[in-house]
Image (cartoon, rainbow, N blue to C red; front, side):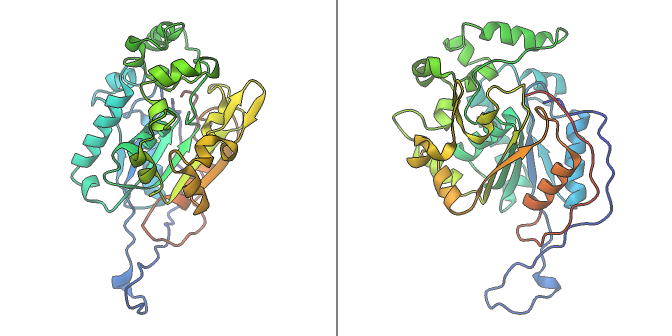
Length: 330
């Protein structure tokens, strides 16, 4: 995801009103009962982006402006921005998720928080879900994903002529997706899922088949961790031409022109990763965003950040004046 560097902050000075944490004896609220400290926010960017990108940093500033005092942590595979961007194309996703788990657990502030919130842009969304299922320390309260490939992709993206890292990675993918070399080194291959090659996917997928619990052995920990979420918010872009199929953002199965909603799939009825239980307690949200992939509107971001991020317990209020945000990559 390449977030526009021309993002402009046009924020008002209002902040969210915090609600009181309930005391055991239900006494009347006073100043000592109020905890308006926002939970930390962890952000994982998408394909072709970097944790140090100016646009992504401005998203963090927006989160802090809406919920003042928010500690924003940007997941990175390398402190060098250029190498971090390369790692969105080249790397072992299992190892990358493990690194994110270790880095967050070792962070002096994140590690002591009662919980964190998480925001995933495109492929960063399913990687954050991998964090929740595999480690979840500290635990995630709310996970919001925009245009993520939760049910995989059936086609690979096109690359600009000037992007040699992207072009080199995509060239290796074509016709070689299931080799051990590709599955351990090329990031998009590790969430490639084509129903025409489903048996090969089950046998060789390094990442997605595992975190979706699609194989015969089901990892109970994955389900136990995901149902601990308060909210899983899945945004699909209505006119997404980058992610194929776009319905993957909602865990939908697409076979040609036939689309099977999540609630009609076996992974839901048998509750492989806890989505059914999460849904039954009101924590699973399917939402749409207008436009193409990562063309995020100011109003959508403001409303989302105000609704799902901030203090552990908070009162809702109108979001501040909007900003502009745009992007195009996975």
